[in-house]
Length: 585
Image 1 (cartoon, rainbow, N blue to C red):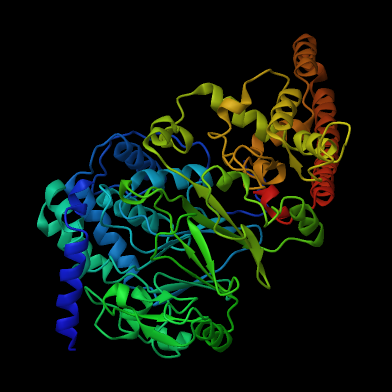
Image 2 (image 1 turned 180 degrees about the vertical axis):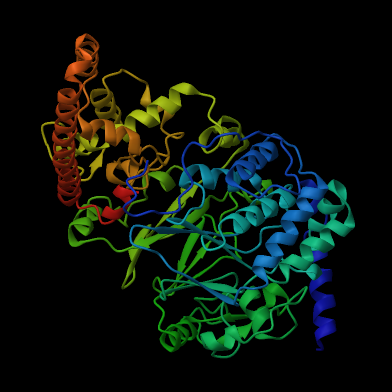
């Protein structure tokens, strides 16, 4: 059958199966690191971006809040985002290398299909992108959901803002032959015009085909190819097409599916076969194909998306390949959870011992999945150099309504109470590290069962109140302070890693200067009074005394600074924190 016939058959079957779906729906200046601050100034929800302004975090957070409220972006600004994102994407290779610095992590997001609530919920759970919080969005941003335009515009804006922290892989729906029929074209025409859909399509053709995390984990939307290929073969593909050319490696990467059991024989499937579910687009492949691909390319794991799975993630081939799907309650009809995959570098041996305390018994369902009765397999795992876990969720509209405003969380801060809370946490971080370290290792305080480095939410709240000396309902502010909704054990509101939490709050330089200089306002005022009463004849004597006083204070300050930094390093070592440099941001 020729390529045109396959194309026609594919479109006709998809149209028949899904007809109507588209419309239904602070600084020490020691190790400077580029991370968006928790509190920004001058964010204005609903503010358009003028042609003279640069795209910044204030604009992106305001835009997300605007989308949550049901508004759309003006056409001029939307076109600018598309144009600037395309300029970034066209210069990228077919396969993007994702490097994780020490202490950084990567969040892999599967299919979103225009479900804005899921994207907002993912950012609420895991934070916005930064140099230490990277994201891979693994294709199928559009179609079937009602907010495909908004989802893509958010991703494009973040790609422009953080080109080396946000990675966009192409999915089979980022193609004109599919999304013209599956809803995206109709949405663009309804909200803007048909020309807007063409502009989006022009940008989609420049999306990379895959990513590789730390030379170990291969991330692609669909799967592997009809033939054994190497990374060089993928890099040599001409990807700049409005849709994947038929019967090519590019089409295979976007359309193929794993198959563990042969439907005809009931035996483990080996080799490759026709992908009849996809109208022969791509192929189905077995475990032996994955083994050869990983051996030829020196990889440890394959991560793909492309299929809706009940638990949000699902393992194949003895945990050599995993499907990650992030659109919860897909199309508003299915009962599936959404999931994202969190990847980080392996910790020290002490970190491994702590992690073992949170590994769920694989014979029982974890707390976050047992409620729904879904189980996608092991929630924790590791490769040679990396460790990973899965976060499951269900992003209903009520979550979006109750979630905090992104401009308040990351942008303009009109809430002075929250600003003061952040200021006090930053200023007392050393004290908090020491307190939490004692609590987490003390059985008397209930921390011994968790292991050093972890505290419960109640212990976290009590520690903050004790260190700051004010009784504040911290649990009500935890999300706005960057505390993830799910704990280190994967459970909702579970225990947290306090070193990871405190690493977000960099001590403001002026506060540290005040602390190490040991200035006493009472002494200062007393000295000023004495200076006022002294005659002009003794001015030279006073100057000498003042110089000596400054030298003495400088020596005391240097000594105190060294003492503080020594305590910080000691506390980090006791807690087994692996990203000590993050404490000096």
